[in-house]
Image (cartoon, rainbow over all chains, first blue to last red; front, side, top):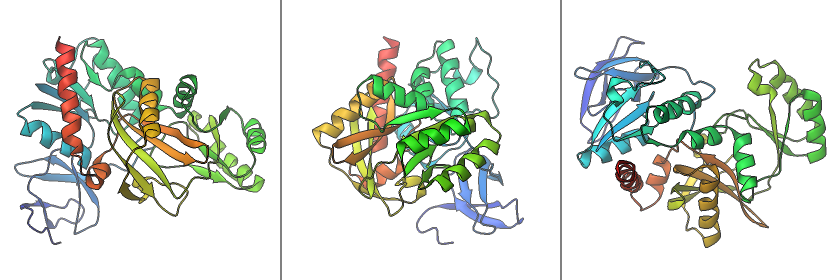
Length: 63
Length: 285
């Protein structure tokens, strides 16, 4: 995955166990798409970044 | 200022707000509402000393309850519980718009499959069935025939949740291949865009193309009137253009503005934070 000029860090994809590259400035609560599994992953901790599978879409989600 | 941010997912929109707030040296207390417990009298510690709360909940049900709780705690909250309650529910929104004289599609509600079918027949085909609560264009049905109506109503009836037995029905508006989104703060437009697509649902969340839109006075006035009708705040007002003039079909209370920010020259998060700062000053006065 080409992250361009964005500073990156690595974290473990909980689906595949692979190390993946993600933007370094992620926030807790942010969702990243895993280049390894394609899954949506939620950032649950930073320093170091810990990822979990993001919750499935629920019916009352929106704006 | 010290800002409380209620969230369950940090979307690009929340990230833009966080960046803008921190760039201005404001402190942000992020509260993940899935992990926090909420007493009905006392705010959680994280919110105890904040100047203002931003409700950015992704789940409408949480947004409706938590804005009300913030008001019970005596905390200024964007948006108000009243605005959240009206905007969360399409029927309440339609009633509020109509009472305020804001043009909106002709709408009826029915509470059984039989009466829904009668309502559909009276509208004629096509007409539109929407979930009374919902967003991003999900579960919206354009009904082209009686056969389709019967099938959709049968499916709705077995979906389970009682909200699916509130049949919110609307005339179909034969609009151009676009609708308009205006983001307003207490009725004052920040910027607007047009959302275009081949599909009858022209929503950025379903991949519509967005282009800057220069508001006519009529559109700006209608956006302001729609905002006032639902209780004001930071809102996304959606309009359709008809031969008789623009009409408002939706008002969004946890508005996503990343697409607008990418589309127009206006710095949308900066304008939003300008307004939040003003609201916090007002609340403290």
